Length: 185
Image 1: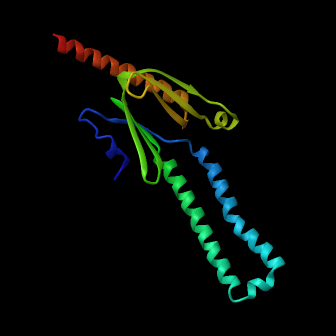
Image 2: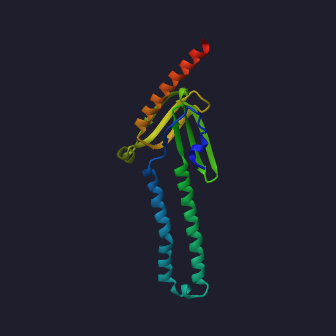
Image 3: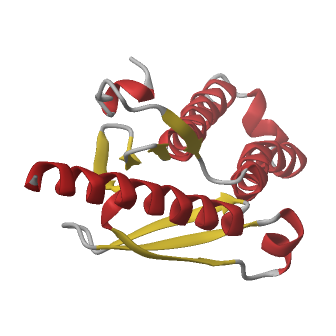
């Protein structure tokens, strides 16, 4: 099941872009994973230096392997969950609407959409050294819909995305105003 199956595209609708968080914002999680994976090696080194007799005992080494296995499985599950939520958070922009898919956890997802003609304002912000160097930031979209504010966090090229959203919104507003004039006649 692909991500595009969530939007149920209309016949005239075409996908303009898919936006995900910038890859650089995933690096702290990788650093944290490396630290967590190194902890058992440090503990093994400390135990073998101070309690080498315990490791030779018939129960010491199997218990160490058991606890290390449980620990590594937990760390890998945590990292996998973080990766899934990172990768599946996506905004799909079409020529008619925006669909925001937020993966909250492994089995929890929120899907919200807004028609482009309801967009009232969009602003972008880039703050911080790394955000400036790697050109990522937030885009805040004010709407007239049920969700008054859409916030896109840590997306690449936020100023370009803001301009694209405003341009697509202006085109969609022209289309809807023409449709209203045609229906009135």
